[in-house]
Amino acid sequence: MRLKDKVAIITGGGRGIGRDIALAYAKEGAKVVVAEVDPATAAATAKDAGNGAMGVAMDVSKKDDIARTVDAAVKAFGRIDILVNNAMKIMPGKLEELPVESWDTTMNIGLRGAFMMSQACAKHMISQKSGAIINIASIAGLFPYNWAGSYSVVKAGLIMLTKLQAMEWAPYGIRANAITPGYIRTPGTEAMYADPDIYQGRLKTVPMGRVGTGEDIAGPAIFLASDEAAYTSGSVLGSDGAQAVGYFLSVPGRRFSGGRMD
Image 1 (cartoon, helix red, strand yellow):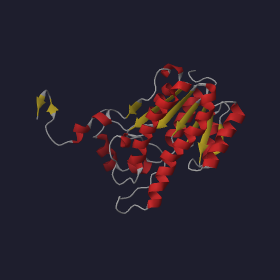
Image 2 (image 1 turned 180 degrees about the vertical axis):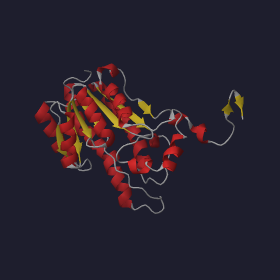
Image 3 (image 1 turned 135 degrees about the vertical axis):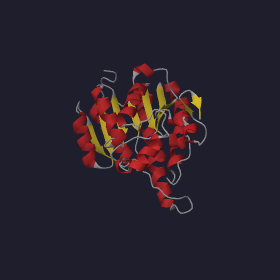
Image 4 (image 1 turned 90 degrees about the vertical axis):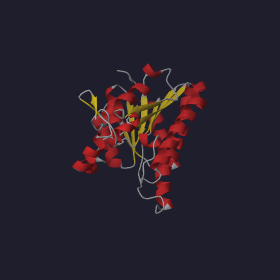
């Protein structure tokens, strides 16, 4: 088991990608703290994870909630080895019409919350001289995602935060890396992917020809948290079926067919 006896906090860990990472970490031997705004979901995921996992109700945009969660993890398990910043809430809308409150909600959860959570955990990691931070970014942090409010800005900021964490905290034995998922099918996006037109349209932009799952993100998250990635920090690891490099698949023009260019 690659994460045996490691202590991991996962924000937004009760559902979707966060849940899949929580279950995968527990299977690899980690003691998981499922931090989720919905207490019922946090408890359910912790129960499913087993291995002593603990569910904690927490709003990552609130500093007091963060302090309480970190204290609970240290009290229960004695240390913090891994932090996964996954919590996110998209408040969609056109920029010219987007309420400032909607912009702030996504910012406060996805970027400000990730900063505050990292800072709180880093204080323990610094004293331990070890730790791993995994920030769940997005290909939307590499390319603009229209009509999604501040989502792209948050994810781009999270990528830069990752690089800054890696540089400043390396002397303390702390590694920080980001994962940039592409199209991922989760319970939260199921209604969208249930639309055949949307589903087929998105497939055309993914060179591997499929929409990803939470398990496709959990695998890289295990690697980056493990000792196998002991010399990996400041990286941005794509998990998108080559979507980020497949831009020209969506550009009208010539295509090769049967060895000929059409």
